[in-house]
Image 1 (cartoon, rainbow, N blue to C red):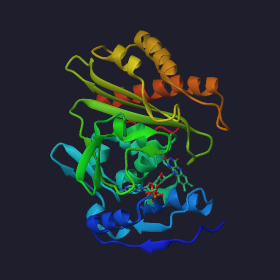
Image 2 (image 1 turned 90 degrees about the horizontal axis):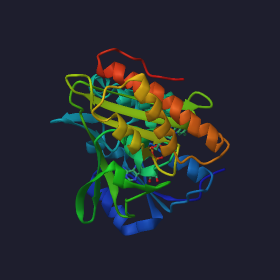
Image 3 (image 1 turned 135 degrees about the vertical axis):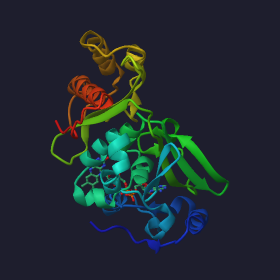
Length: 297
Ligand SMILES: Cc1cc2nc3c(=O)[nH]c(=O)nc-3n(C[C@H](O)[C@H](O)[C@H](O)COP(=O)(O)OP(=O)(O)OC[C@H]3O[C@@H](n4cnc5c(N)ncnc54)[C@H](O)[C@@H]3O)c2cc1C
């Protein structure tokens, strides 16, 4: 199917883009990688009358380190993450997510910011970045504000973004050492959206106890979730086999899956436990300096 007619704009600055959003409001949509928006337009699930293509705004490209944060411009592609030595060294959980998202073509175009703005409950970036200290920078007519990712996504496909606002940056705190993280996804076919996914990020103290721990669930609820009961159990302790039995149960209980063509509620809840075991094991190995390749079950 062909998309409905639309008018196309290609601004060169954020201010120019915001000007189009202010003028056309709900009738306008930002076009980033187009990997979610264009398929929706072709299916006529979305029919924006005005497209504001931000790909010509050079200041939004790529990623950089600013102090103790990794800052990704709104045009930072999934492939930029895969290629980043900074990510490889400090944020392997993000390398997992980038390498497990879709296929090479999608990864070359799709953006991290676009994935967060789209807020697909099965998306890989929301579940991954929720395990980290992630801020979303939003620009609008009233200026710029930074929102924690946990508040940015409010429901399935719904964020805090107003019609005349756009994401300009996504930033992540670089975790202090020793720390490690892993993102594990179960998909029906390679490159597909997750049936279920789990992210784990741990920071250890000098006795290898968990100083900080985050456990996140993807495709297991209307939004990405934090498994807070399991986090509290692991906090301050050594990760042992006995502890993981209880932690896994708590992770399964935290999941809020719904049945669909990808699986039943019981199946997805079971997967949550299995993926948690794999993710926590890889995260601990990485925190202790052992290299672990991207996990594709
Ligand atoms: C075949 C295929 C397989 C895929 N598989 C996966 C997968 O396994 N896992 C996964 O997570 N994703 C998958 N995707 C989705 C892909 O990751 C998209 O790139 C991503 O969801 C959206 O990013 P985008 O830059 O393409 O956004 P676009 O498609 O350009 O935009 C998506 C939405 O976000 C809005 N938006 C984009 N950027 C901004 C911004 N800066 N400010 C405000 N609003 C903005 C747009 O207006 C639109 O509403 C797949 C896509 C395809 C086509």
